[in-house]
Image: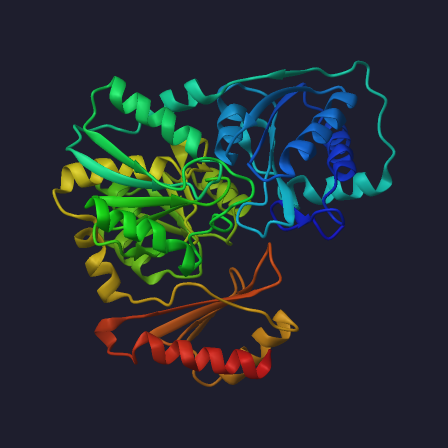
Length: 454
């Protein structure tokens, strides 16, 4: 079953992901994990509701009660698994994948991720076997509105007196709009001086502006223009299931998720020094520099939410971040959230008395990066091996935490096969103080080599 990935399930509709697949997954989840009750939500994709219905039928037929959260982001399912003390949760979503895809993100008790090494492989084998247990009872399904409890939790992250702020919000017609509305109502109820400029706000599974994926340069234009038009303090945009958020400064400039990891790590360590910060291995120098400056402890983890969360729990880390714009919080059950970061940004801008551009400017100047560049190649592993051989007599250090990281002292790059798409992902960074070539030089160098060997 090729839809089973390293830390979730994703595949093409009608061939890999079907209502029958969703039903069978529900039966398998019931037998493998034997929960009494789980929470289920779905994003706005046109196929998500029918898949959710089939999944719930499978769970119910397996004897599991279901709390149907309706239209929900992935983190609402996480929160339900935490706050309601149910035994797990499943979100129907393909996040930022194309329109003809869908999938599922699964968690167990206390929102612990179910990945390849923690249950997905077992589920896949069980589904292929198809020999399901006969339950002692038929499960039931009831609608459940998690939003009021979730909003109360989110408001707890606003811990300072806020200055007046104007913020552009862009869900990209994905699932985030209803939470933005609920937060706006809470801001008004608490007399907070926050003005929201909402664009591409209403859920629309046709995605008229394209799949919600601010990693794509063409998808950033609307947020940038709205920030400039309304003279906003910053803009924030989300992917389809809003477990990732992306920031734009007051000048409308997109801020790479890498620098947001550094900024949030700094904010946490200023309040609580010597805490552990988990980071992914793709871009690291700025994050390591900030953690060292603020007496923190850096912990590297393989990329992907299931891996990061496992390390977060093992290390009891206060915060974890990926350059792909996933941000993880100990106070949120070590889970990732696309809502918590922009609330923390309100705190930062209110206490620092500096614009967002100034908060990240030094980081960007000292450690320029390429942003993630994706390549379609015939064989990812053979391409990575060819790069290893090419740089064998130049590289100072190799890191195989995730893919392969090449450190040359003044510059480094990480190359890895995607866990969710048939792509090879490249990230490059430099140290300005060591006077390397401009970042564009290394982008062209690696692009030429990958095209040659891919």
